[in-house]
Image 1 (cartoon, rainbow, N blue to C red):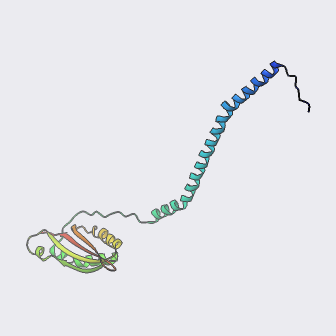
Image 2: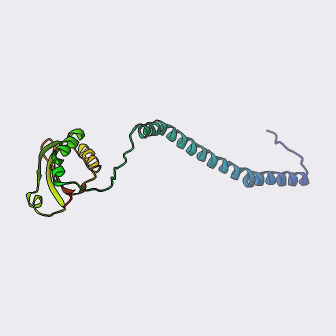
Image 3: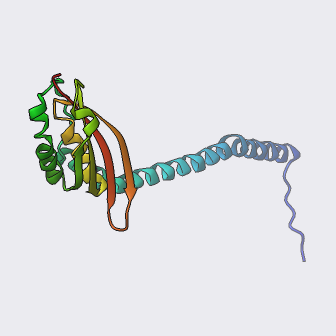
Length: 178
């Protein structure tokens, strides 16, 4: 076989090596970092697209929550000016209490005035109540009770879980004219 022989002058060969080196340096210094930067940007774009898709998935939940907030009545707790009532009107409180608990869905097991406060010059009448029902109805009843202007305070709330219902024992203080 014959050898392939090129007669390339030494200076031309040096120029080829120098130009090849410049091209290699240009690729390493210029294009390789740009390639790595493009890979990084592609990853960032993918992350952003995934976040957008995730948020698009949350749009129905957000719209449902917004619709629910608009449709619900805003619970504004009543805060009437405090007044007092006579003992005769305080005797009508059990009927008012039974009406309120009936509207809220609770059942009155017992409602008894405390006999130690009914006689004398006390400015308050204590009623002990035992109710049964579920907790959301109890909450409605408490909100409705807070609208009564002569109700001084509710104290000693005891909640017990029974087999198929909750039992609530509360003490209600009414402000009366002495």
